[in-house]
Image (cartoon, rainbow over all chains, first blue to last red; front, side, top):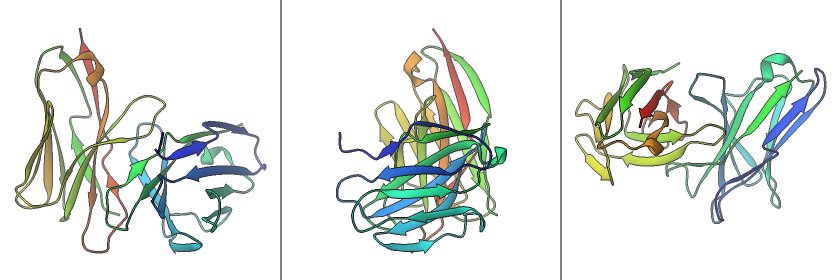
Amino acid sequence: NAGVMQNPRHLVRRRGQEARLRCSPMKGHSHVYWYRQLPEEGLKFMVYLQKENIIDESGMPKERFSAEFPKEGPSILRIQQVVRGDSAAYFCASSPGPEAEQFFGPGTRLTVL
Amino acid sequence: GQQLNQSPQSMFIQEGEDVSMNCTSSSIFNTWLWYKQEPGEGPVLLIALYKAGELTSNGRLTAQFGITRKDSFLNISASIPSDVGIYFCAGLRGAGSYQLTFGKGTKLSVIP
């Protein structure tokens, strides 16, 4: 399966812990996007990365959230000191170019207790 | 920020019926995309529209890019139970844009 892969699919954390979400883009795609979805809502853009570069992080909270897409390995969305309001589904998408169609992974559902 | 308004929010239809849903915006978008999301999964791209006035089909699905570039609709003909899910419209603003703006979705239920 050459689709976008995300893991874990479900993640439970207690308040104050760290959450690490991983995303492997489709083969041949070097552009990765992270979106967040709250219940009963559409997806909201968080950050756009190319290999080793953050292009746009305007949708990401300034505190506690960070993202990277290293030369080797998956893209990581990191949330430090999680709070209950961070509970959501986090989706990664990839594309072959910045204006091309984005294909989504199955998401990571984060629950903060 | 920009918003896409989708309607209806939800619909219940009988199997075999046709379905129509739409998406409007106060701003112009140069690309419209329609996705379907099933429970516990990510959005799956159904149709992409790149030109104002464009009408594109994908099997029983047909979508149109409005002439004003501020709206789009999706039709599903002869619905079947596996059409159940949430349908999202999404837009890209223009050259160099990559931030998808999503509507809140239309939840479709099909009664066998």
